Length: 309
Image (tube, rainbow, N blue to C red; front, side):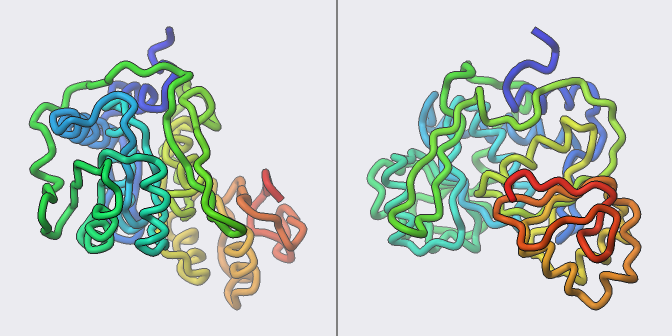
């Protein structure tokens, strides 16, 4: 077995051993960042805390955090898998009754949230009998444990044994034409890019897809597998996106088609210096405009890849 293993969390462990002090992820909204060592250690501490509170192999744990808490989100995602549990990335735009339907169907045992979303989480708990453990970064409530109190002092490697055929995530569809449906994602097919020993560049991969979507999940581990730092922008604004590209000089970026259309229509698009972008991926919905690599009448990159449209 190569040092980088087969599971997503194996890749994080490998990067923490080989590139411990490198910046793994940046939150462009807050200006905060995580090194690989901080990410790995934080996820192990949280995983041990969850296990100590009864979260067992195969249990479902909701990650109910907004994109503005991206660093807590990615720590939580790794922690759930380290604990041998199944992550349920949860849409933060849904109402309490919709959440009760989804999380009741998943049979969640735990829920990780923050002060902003805690009132809704408490509403949901009353309708989900299986939910025993609620952890919140900020805020108070009956039966709610503070995030920092759940963290175990021991940050060393922890991995409750899981295999490739085991469930990794349960992703729920939007429910546009009916009730949302749970999609079982196994450790064997959760990764878009296989584990490897990347040539570290530290270049930025910019994205802003909601973390509870397939696109958002993919960009948690993909940057490190390409030897890159993930750079997340939780709230998309076309003018700000152009400024970030000019200032931060990412070499890769991901957009959904609606974002790309807003960029092309922005008055600064033609003059903005987007020359650092080597590849732009556009997906998660059909593209309305034909990409034209290297042309400002199309999309802003030397190579444009549209995997889903």
